[in-house]
Image 1 (spheres, helix red, strand yellow):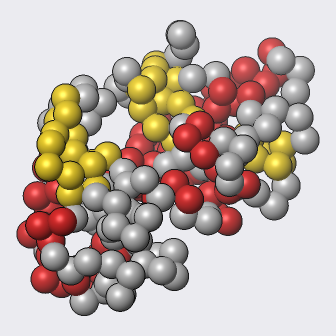
Image 2: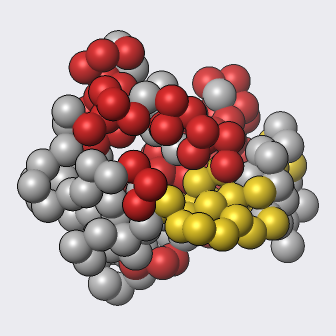
Length: 195
């Protein structure tokens, strides 16, 4: 367990110790993380459904526009979500119901085009991936480790640490000021490890 706390999160040292190999990382996203759907806060589900007619315009023939089939039937309790309740996005055609065959997210496309911010209504953990929160610990989500180059980290031969490679995701989660604190802590930790 980590001793470092920034904002409301404990920080996993893996963020400093590992990173992506050269040419790999979230910017090379292969959308394999979306193959089994994603967990979203029930409040985020409500927000998405409030824009359902607009989102449908950004879907293709590999998706369903039947919004009653967009989310799983049952919720789970999970205190890493804002409301402590989460629900899964449904899998349709072997992928998240919001994933187009082009690999683009219909929610993100709508949000960017019509709300002026690609992440305005995109669910928190969709934006954060491959960073996640587990029991209050900010860490790397190993769901696609060794299955997808865009989501597989290494300790040797890394181009950058996760702190650098996942800057957008970490700034989204922590905010600019706390991200700077994370960078300062990283410098200290790397000095200790002689890296």
